[in-house]
Image 1 (cartoon, one colour):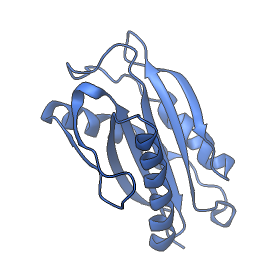
Image 2 (image 1 turned 45 degrees about the horizontal axis):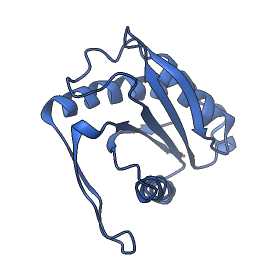
Image 3 (image 1 turned 120 degrees about the horizontal axis):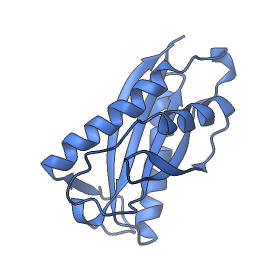
Image 4 (image 1 turned 60 degrees about the horizontal axis):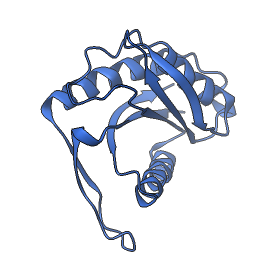
Length: 167
């Protein structure tokens, strides 16, 4: 059985994005564009998160449900993630532990793009799915969580994605 994982880091930073607000009542797409410097930095952080998540040893594959975890954090004066919190638990302790371990293992997020402010909060979404169909279902749930956050007034999200087959 082939499993799919996806790491999505959502960087919350007002100065770094262009956001076209949709009608919150409709099903219109949310368009977010990162500046080039930000895009390069996002790739680096996503690669760091993804490589650790990919190296995490899988328990029995049948024991892991298709689900996602969300981790928020800031970084200290050395660029090391700090104030790490699991803000959305999955139905799997393995997914939750792997997500937290991935964030904790980032050596540094420096150099930060010039537009990142001190105390910036970051979010990483970790998806684990048993197949592509389950992945699509879980990814839709992650998307809906971002839509709810935007509707609540937090319009400062840049989503980054790294995918890999697991198992």
